[in-house]
Every structure is written in C-alpha cells, then in structure tokens.
Length: 142
Image 1: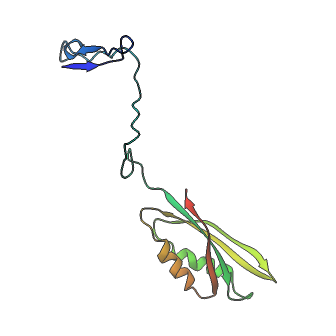
Image 2: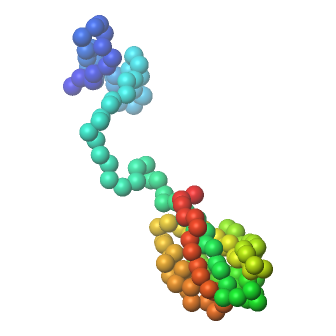
Image 3: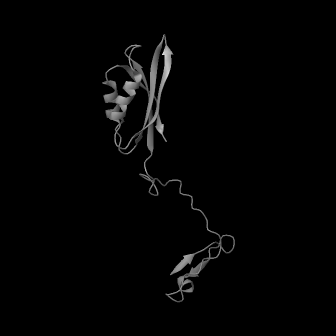
C-alpha cells in the first residue's frame, strides 16, 4: 500500500510505502514531507448544514398602530410579552410619535429559527384589543 505525497519533480508524483510510516504499531506515524495542497471541487454539492452548524435566531420587528390616540400602548406591549414563546425574547419595545398626536409602538422579538412560532405570535398580536394595524418592518437572521 502506498500514500501519495507532494510531487517530487515537475509532472512526477512520489509514492511513500505505508510500511515506512509505521514501522512499529505502538509508535506514532511520522508526518509526510511536503506541503498540503487544497483540493478544488467545483461540482460538489452539500445538503444541509456542514460541520454541526446550528440554526440561527430570527429578529422580527413590528410597527403597531393603535385604534385611536387614547389607546394605552404600554398596556398593549405588556400584553404582547405574554404571547412570546419559551424560546423567544423581546429585543425592542419603544413608543414613538406618529402623526396628529398619535403614537405608534415599535416592538421586536427574537425567536429561534428552528422552532419557529412567528406566525402564531403575529396572529395573537393582531387579535389584541386596541391594535388597529400591525406590520412587519424588519425581519432577518442574527
């Protein structure tokens, strides 16, 4: 049995017998001489994550418009906290001025991408009393 190593001369590939590498089974193998070359595989396709890469987290940021100017946005934000799944957390909760004395709520949540739950959360948020409109203003992996 032979192991290939770095070309000795131009166009020639040297072979090293395996027996030279391991004279005694209880000793470590000697390192091969010569540089290690990278192999280019342009047609290779991999399915799924490589090297144990974990799924990421998703940031979803919402703009919540109340039904009217008298609606308590802090109360709505507190209600939204109850809807967050166990694998999620709040990233932002800000009340900002919108127009004609009305305020809006910018509210963001971070969810585990693999476990999901964004659709159910959004459905519950839309059904909350006092919410006039709800739109996603930002969504992306973090």
